[in-house]
Image 1: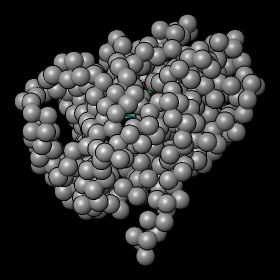
Image 2: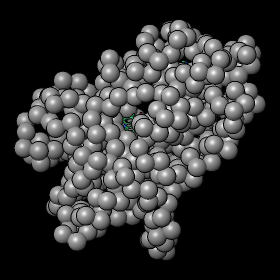
Image 3: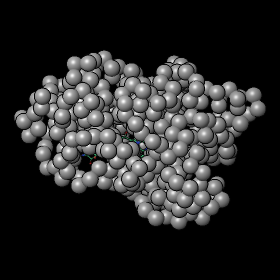
Length: 369
Ligand SMILES: Cc1cc2nc3c(=O)[nH]c(=O)nc-3n(C[C@H](O)[C@H](O)[C@H](O)COP(=O)(O)OP(=O)(O)OC[C@H]3O[C@@H](n4cnc5c(N)ncnc54)[C@H](O)[C@@H]3O)c2cc1C
């Protein structure tokens, strides 16, 4: 059976590994000259966002025999709002490395693959369609899906980040929700060693936001983060991404083409997490090709999760700094603290996003009216 995988990122490699495990040798095409050929960055996965699955890494190991080693478990997530600081205690997920680093998730996946990857590929989708029985689109954005009329883009974002040197605990991540500084967006710090971390901001490209000067916003955020963490970081690398697409495909398969990873729409619009769902779409598409299961059936919870996360995004956008201050302040409230930590923990099975979606919808409708 001839299967072409376009893109050797986390979804494409997960698909290739799964196909191999079931006796199919795919041909993987990667346009860059190595796996993870981009800036090194720290990313995170939070169990709470993947319910009913409790521990994503354990789940993919036990169910699909894919092993990934994170940098650390997240044991504390600190929220900084305009006037408050609060935190949630874990364990609640993992921090991991991406990009041009030997321990990045894509490099770890490459090691689990026997098939050689065809680097520096110039093949386009149309050529692959002619030559292969199945084509897996795993190029990491919604562009191809859009061209094929199979993508609903809900928003695009601007992302700017840096690698910093400082002193970090790899089990502690930070986030900033301060709409005065980053309107309708957020910032985060994810360490990928005790000496290095990423500091990033992301915000939606709404008309009022695109008028803003990114560099001024960045400077304000950067100074705020240095002050909040009481450190003078040293910047060693930086990146900027414009018009990062957040949306979802209409169909997970069209004819002989499978849409996986960001080509499927795995980025959650609420908080921008996409790694875990990207791995799942890789595995699910392979299962379909191997006649072990149906991709469109397996993907149903991912569509639902996306839609719930879109409600979360609108909910967050409808808050103001006072509302956010109130929420953040209460994270450390004596009575709520234990309850919140329990719900967020890896051990909880409560599907919080699903549970809260109707209430968030009500709030969103109230704000619209
Ligand atoms: C700054 C940033 C921070 C993020 N943080 C988080 C986070 O903390 N947690 C989280 O869960 N998610 C996060 N995400 C989202 C997550 O990284 C993505 O959802 C995930 O990487 C998507 O996987 P993928 O396989 O679709 O794409 P990728 O892993 O990006 O792989 C796509 C591959 O396709 C290749 N390619 C592209 N075009 C072609 C072509 N024409 N031919 C052949 N190959 C091609 C690329 O070179 C690349 O190797 C973040 C994203 C960004 C941008």
